[in-house]
Length: 406
Image 1 (tube, helix red, strand yellow):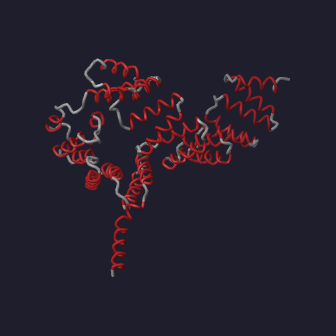
Image 2 (cartoon, rainbow, N blue to C red):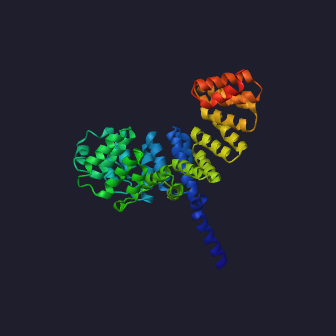
Image 3 (cartoon, helix red, strand yellow):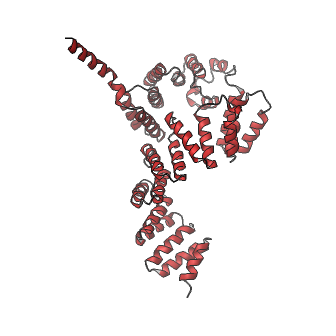
C-alpha cells in the first residue's frame, strides 16, 4: 500500500509540474520574440496562436502581457483585462500599464489612473512621452481626474531630459540634443541619472570612446538596465573592441532582453573576428524570428562566402530572392558566387537582374563584363567595361585598355 501511495503521489506531482517542464526558458524567450515580430507585422492571428500554444503549457508574465496587448488592440477588452491582471499576479506591477489602458478604453478615468500610478511606482515605469502619445488615453484626457493627476510632477528632471534627448536623436536633431544636455548640466540633476543622456548624444555624434568612457566612469555608479548595457556594447563594437562587445551582448541575451536585433549585432562582432560559425548561428536565430529579412539573408550569404561555403551562400540567397525579388545585393552576391564557381552564364544573368534594378552601379557593370569576357563575348564585355568606366570605376579602364583597344 505504501509503495502504491508513493507512486500515486509521484504521479500527481509529475502532472502538476509537467506544464512547467514542457517548454524551456530559451523556447519561451524565442516565442516572445516571434510573437512580437508577428504582431509588429500586423499578423495578430498567428501571434495569438503562438502565445496560446505556449500559455497552455507554461506560465510567464511576459507571454500574458504580449497576449493582452493583442486582445486590447483587437477590442477584446475582457480578455485583455484578464491577461494583464494575471501578469501582475505573476510579476508585481507588470500588468499595471495594460490595465490603465484597459480602463481608459472603457472611459473609466478613476480606475485607469489608479493603475497608471501603480505603474509609475513599479519597475515597469513607462515614460511620460509614451503615455502622452498613447491614443488609448484619448477618451479620458479631458477629464478632471486626468488633469488633477498630471498637476503633480510625476517625473524627475533627469527622466524628462532623457525623454527629450531620445526624441531629438530619433528625429535626427543630434546637435539640438547636445545643446539640451549641455544646458541642463548646470542644474541639480544627479550626475549618474543624466549621464545616460550625455552618452546617447556622444554615441549619436560618432564619439564612441566618449560614450564608453561615460558609461564606465565612476560617475556611472547607479546606472543600470539593458538600455545602458546595449549602448555600451554598441560603443565597443564601433570602437573595434569586438570581444568586449560580444561579452556584453551575450550577457544581454542571457537576461532575455526583448530585442532580436541584438543577435544581428553580435553576429557582426563574430564576423569581425572571423568566427563565421558563431556569426551564422546568431543570424539563423534571427531568421527564425524574421525568416524573410533581406538584411539577415544577405548577411548570411556573405558569411558563407567568406567561409568558402558557396552551397550555403546559394541557399540563403535563393531564399532571399524568393522573399525579396528586388534585392540588388542578393543578385550581386549570388552573381559573385557563380563567378567564383566559373558558372559565367548564371553570373551574367544575376548581374543583369541587379543592373535592371540599379543601372548606375559601376562595380556590377564591371563584374558582368568580366563574366562575359570569360564566356568569350568580348564585344558585349567591352560595352560593360566602358559603361563601368563612365560611372567612375577606375578598374574598368584597365580592362578596356587590355581587351577593347585594337
